[in-house]
Length: 456
Image (cartoon, rainbow, N blue to C red; front, side, top):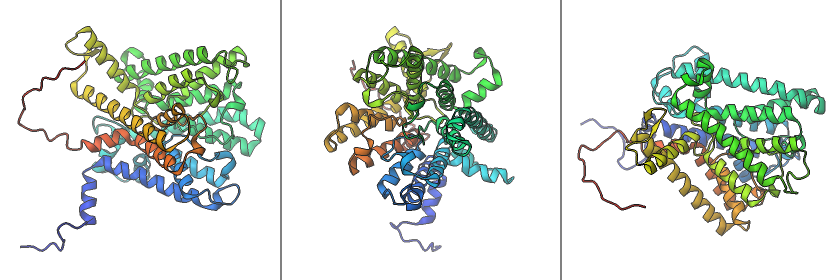
């Protein structure tokens, strides 16, 4: 018998590394965790702050998690607390979190002319939410080029407004930072009070809205739009993403305008064009970027409730946005409609939805609802803030939105940990689900009798 030198029941690094190779979702989970920890260590250093004092490990960990998970919730003001070095670290975390760990890890060897192995392709497949490995490297190249192009164009447009107000150096940095933050759906700002001082500037507002929207559509959708340039020729996935994204944005804008139009704490004193612009801005931002152009602490409860719905749905699969995802919400709507109509199977654009797609959508929404309810319930016990504010904060963290009623800095240490864990779960949620059902291909050959359960 050959001796392996391994003691049964003990941890062996080689076995753990081998198991990692068989689980791409787990690699991504650990990759994001590693990025968060590295960022937290760097942001803890005193030389990255304005005052030359450390903000503390918990605050640094919270900030790093928010940046890596492209959320935007902050316990310290980014503009007032961090100097240029700290802001650069945060921006690097945002870019890495927006593109994905594996995208950047694969880009370096690809630029050096090295071949990308099967395992790396499988991890990229999980990260980009693809069904197959076909054309994955071509898509990866498109993702990088498209990201740099859109962020560059956005920075140029923003620079035309920031440079005249802040000077060449600071204005250029502000334009670059906010272009990347918007495209990655992060919502971090270095202006001190987000976009509120520029709420009447159409160039800044509509540029940021365009960046957030494009980043939230998903790379597969933008690639298909560029290649086909005809709505009728698009795939069902792209059609559903575009229709739902446009509908949710319009509904959110009209709802925000109607409910805040006479609110003296938000829109009452603004001109009509600014009211309309702010309404569309906040509706788009709910798709998951944490900028604001209206005072968040002055919002009415009904407006907060509408925004919570939009934040929970979030952006689209394979994008820089978070949340439940528009297509998941769309599948549930179509399935519900088919059930009410008594149809044999739900259909969309003359094609039926598979049971696997429906089960996955149901699983995602159940996991999301349970997570939000559980965290909100715990926070009501440990925190002193209002219930609605805590639920708003929780959904914002889960959807990686970053909007807040202003309670984030006042959370207890336990509350901050709960929110940062929710941000992490919201960013890697689909991957976590994929890891949990990693053995989904091991079907049993035995089919058990059907259970008769009365529902409804």
